[in-house]
Length: 177
Image (cartoon, rainbow, N blue to C red; front, side, top):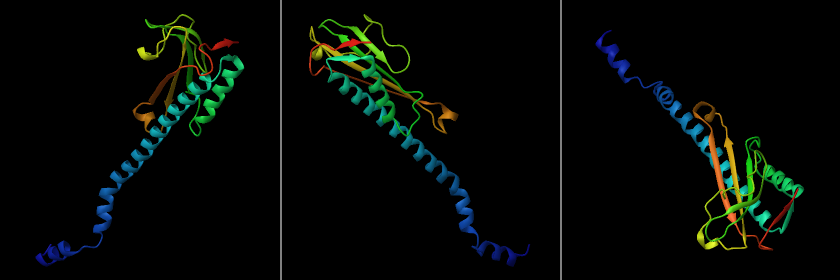
């Protein structure tokens, strides 16, 4: 190649934008996919938080619950998770007797999986200021496993939220199946 041809080649700027795009495009695609993945994870985490709060609030408003009442609450929880698949959603409701020195589960119900047995340990730590003899505590624990396109490659996201509150209308919430 002659010196003149080399200068022409080095001075030619046609196609430089295509080369730059080819170098930057993979990073832009990863950034876009990562943002979509982050949005799904944050959206699902927000839904799990909302479900936990609503279930705890609904249970705390009652003085007596039946199995049908809890089934309706669990169905509502599943509806709240939309547009995410509900197959991996688990909601556990535990009503606990929590005196000043600890506490045990009085009764429990679960949307999926096994409920806690009566007399089991309380599923979350209840602050000492909320522990009062004769007053039960409503505890709700929600777990959800989110599976996305990237999580299939790198592992799923396990989301978990717990909430506790006192009953609103009475000190004790009874359960009839």
